[in-house]
View 1 (tube, rainbow, N blue to C red):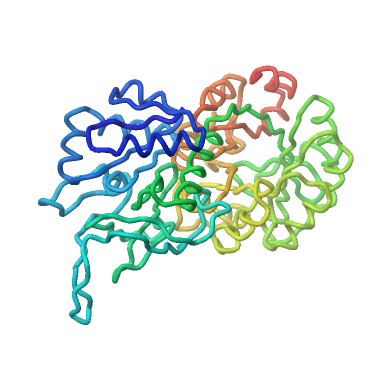
View 2: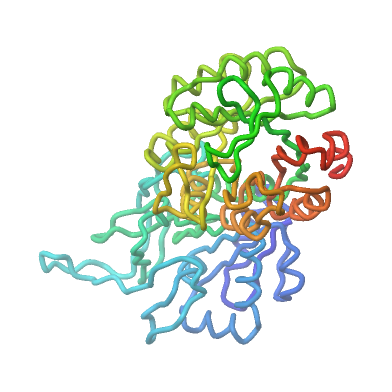
Length: 453
């Protein structure tokens, strides 16, 4: 259920009526503990930034909102509520905001660069233009919405801006990062487009809070046509566990695995498909879904697998080297694309873990989540193959920051590790990739499956 925050400065009636038209269940509350239980929150707002922050602070709702965002559940700020998401406002003197998004709120100049005056406040219908893709814009076309405001957001991070309009200056109209969204206009007063945007927010809520199972992904890493495991991604520290990737995949499927995780290590290192025949054979002959990563650099690579029965293709290195391509593939193939984020000390490693980028896993995850990525596979290279336990904190952080499904990879050594990860299902951790622990006999596939049911 959607919670509408009542702090004495929101247009509660119009927002609630809009949700009723959308048949979206909601409640209105000023109680922090009650609001924390909501599936998503709406922060409406009319009036002064300074007055609004004073009321939020006095009621204890400021801390509640920040705590709520940490859960990964969606938050939407409307009009003044959007402005409150940023760091500070110059309205009635500098006032600190919620600082959930980077930037400040400033007054319209009222005078063009040519010295001509124009009307402030910005009041009436204006056309918004989409700046980048976002799930909140799904199946929506650019159109006019209704604005009433004298102050606007100025942000140094253009990735935060989803849509904007022109009012002498470029005005962020829809903003978002991770699970935090904002609309400067009143969606409930903006005819069809406004209601469609609001509907998309309610769908994000349903997607985020839908019951999620926890999936075990037995892993098969392939090199030279054999099943191997590398120690912390080191190609010089290899252990061979089988001569046939297909036979290994069949044993996992026969043991009850619903998914099998396969990695083309040669492909990851060389930047091209090498062991693809084993992947396709498993996908076409076994009663289990297959996901594949390694050596996938082009759309041709993606279609090669998808057209031959593979259920999901993992984009890794190319997401760093060519994020625009990754975004295009996400938007084209949807949930059939997963993003592999392999991290060394928090930074994404590429090309078979031989190189480390300057981009953090969380930064890249947020950007691709905003573009529509639904599934992330996170590997902490320091724990991979070490049987030392997964990096639970990093997995949880990525799930919360992106608001998407995260599969943990690396470090699982005992059934207790799976129990710990499964406890994070409500935060978006949806599964675990397990390799060496199975090969070394720490536990079997049936035991792992039983543990997480």
